[in-house]
Length: 266
Image 1 (tube, rainbow, N blue to C red):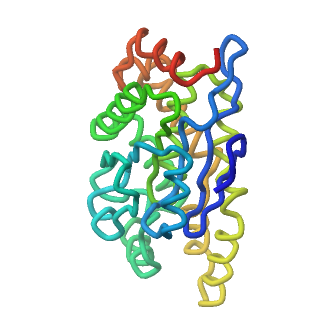
Image 2: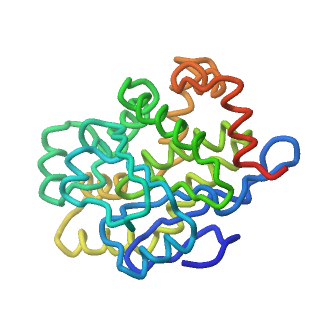
């Protein structure tokens, strides 16, 4: 794992590990480095990777995956890291953990393209009570992470949908501009590009074409369309992001002020 001030963190057996430090926020402040990182699954971390997390200062591991995903591929983390399981959905609606055969069956049953399905998933993250509950507890953990050198890590399976929205809510609470939040969200596609290309080539070689290929791509990538669907749902149901943070995620004005004290440079 690289030193601080690097956006993308390299692991032996982990991908989409990223710093949320360095982004400009309100009043000329910036988000502190080495305080919050977003990642994909921690199920395959090597001993080296686990030591890298310790060296980096990781003290909290927030896991947004469903019960089924956790049972199938539990996090491999050092003993001194505090683990919290906060499932955003009862099952993996994002399909990130599904096999090719499961995806095939799902697509036949679903009657919806992968892209349209993902739009629904993003809307659900905004309105479903279980999602609200998970993100409320995520913010409670962020607010309790008061040690200056303690890092909070949060993740799902691919580190792009449930994690992507968690990052968007966190950065929004700190006053990071919308455009930059969206750039951070879309950065997943650049980072996962080799992985995505390999998966699509493999699928093509197996004779997968048309809608199924589009669905695999929709499920492995992030999209402006997904992000915008979530933001539109926020505007529709809550009026604005600050209202959403206050009403759905139960963040008070004091909580927002405390988050800024903890995570912004002074």
